[in-house]
Length: 102
Image 1: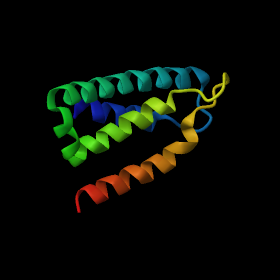
Image 2: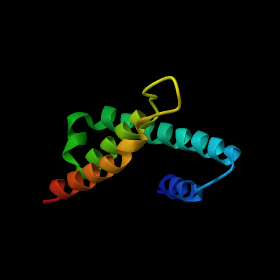
Image 3: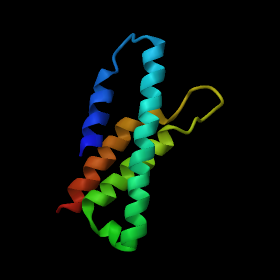
Image 4: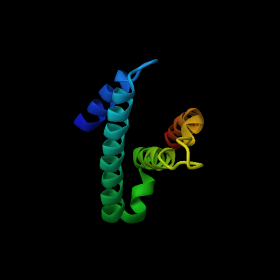
């Protein structure tokens, strides 16, 4: 829970027209958080196996981790990434949780 709160705090620091140094630091910190959440997901997958996907919150976490990893993959050699899909991914996650709890 503490890692989630720290992740939220670092995401809230981002703002318009921020210095490049801050952008680089936040990018690095975000990569560290993605690695932590990916490790958590892998450990739970190894421990729970297919039962992992029976828990709606685990499915939600899995989708968020996959989308976060995809967001780090550049589409072309420049710094373009999957950032445009984050809004769609958020809607997908909300729908997934909504369907899972019905």
